[in-house]
Length: 314
Image (cartoon, rainbow, N blue to C red; front, side, top):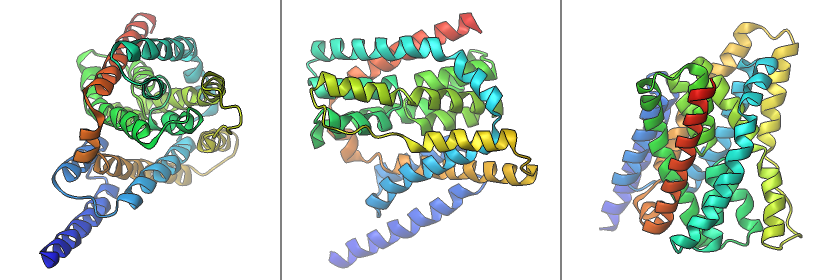
């Protein structure tokens, strides 16, 4: 039995590495990488769970920074300002609605707050930032993160299909994805699937939206009375902006900047495999019906509200 288990783990490890290498190539699209990761997680055991978790986090950040070398700062500022007013409305309204519905669904105050934070701003990054400030325990963190990750997986597969069905322009879809999809990885993946312009708009608006982590952390400190906690600044966003500045004002050879962007996109595809592979059966079971229902209702609210706003404004 021990030998069988050892052989199984070895097979899973080899398969995991092989799929990872394939995901770096141009043959695998972002949605397909996520689907393969999910299939792996639901049928096999992840051989390197700690590596998978760290790789999905840091590789995403490097990918986002690399994408900055394919963007112009002036275009990015315009794209970011387009979604600013609705960003303010959506962040505040989702946070308030999340706390109200949390009481109605009998979800704990901290779990409701974390799920609302992830929905309002940038998914797992927001939860990981405000969770310690809110003194969330391991169970509350796991439930909130799992809820957001499950919805992210569906969003990455579903949004591009809906965008084409609704005949959204590249700009419209980029705005919608940035506002209505939780995690930066899924936003960038959905934008990349829809088109180059959608990718630029989605990435810029999402990272502008992610800066709301800072005021949210300050509010969380006040709301949960924990003034001694430090705010975790998402430094990769600042490096993304620096990459755009360098690409805009320096005469970087096109082949060099284009090469960085290509590598960044393939790394993003690999990241989505890692994210899907981390969504195991145990993670899904840990969520429970009520937190998942809260997450779904908040997701529907922001998706429909933002789509309505964008559809009639652009």
